[in-house]
Length: 109
Image (cartoon, rainbow, N blue to C red; front, side, top):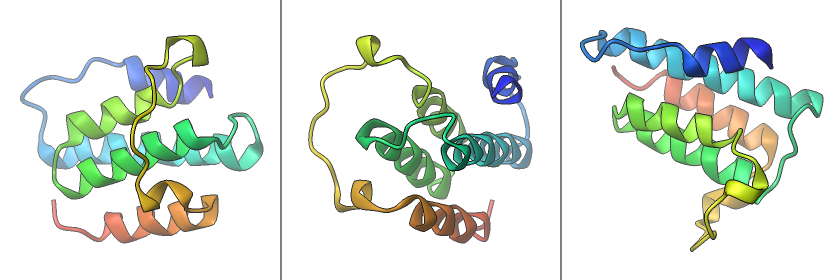
């Protein structure tokens, strides 16, 4: 978890290469999924939504937005905004989310 927190707060130069920004998002997602696997983070509706939104943004090449969604996983419940509409994707299991990340890794930068 500490490595994830350091990764999320590390400054990212605005002109950072797309590949580097993508690598950082992938690393952060790996850390979050690892924490979910180990039970260090709960796997609730909020966490599913954040991870899946990060994957969608990553697929579209919006790596800064993807990182924002990864960071949102760590937002404490009291600070979370009201949750709106949930997509079908939010019902995926943790294993299916892992599969989605692997599929997304193969998308072009």
